[in-house]
Length: 149
Image 1: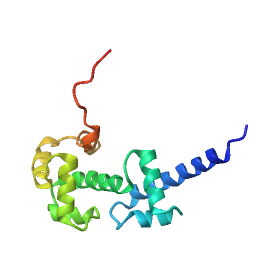
Image 2: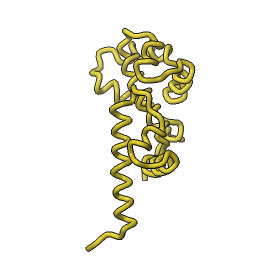
Image 3: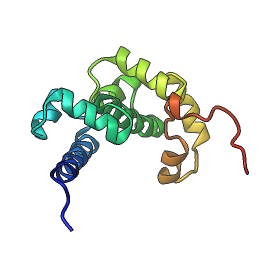
Image 4: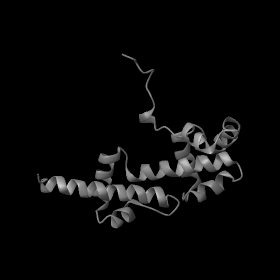
């Protein structure tokens, strides 16, 4: 049984999108932008953004910022770096943008998170702390209690 050319192209696009996502996961601290990611995937920036959003539910930039914030959370829990040092360590170039995005995703500013997380995750293995403290995007937060049928 042979696939149609459109289906084959779709599978090739999904493989390229996985490579882009994997690159973001690996190189989150590097200066990445949609144009650079698109060049690496041999796609236009607009096409990459549309297809990435369709495949993963968010834009490449939003995915990159979520990865950076997740890593920042881990560094802030350690407690040995300042918020500014963490900001630059995860690849953000603007402390204001970092703080705003962190607050949007986590619900508290980075300095508050640093104080609270140190107490809340004391004695917890880092792999468990990472899962428990993972940021939840607003559209993913449950609207109410789930109904059990």
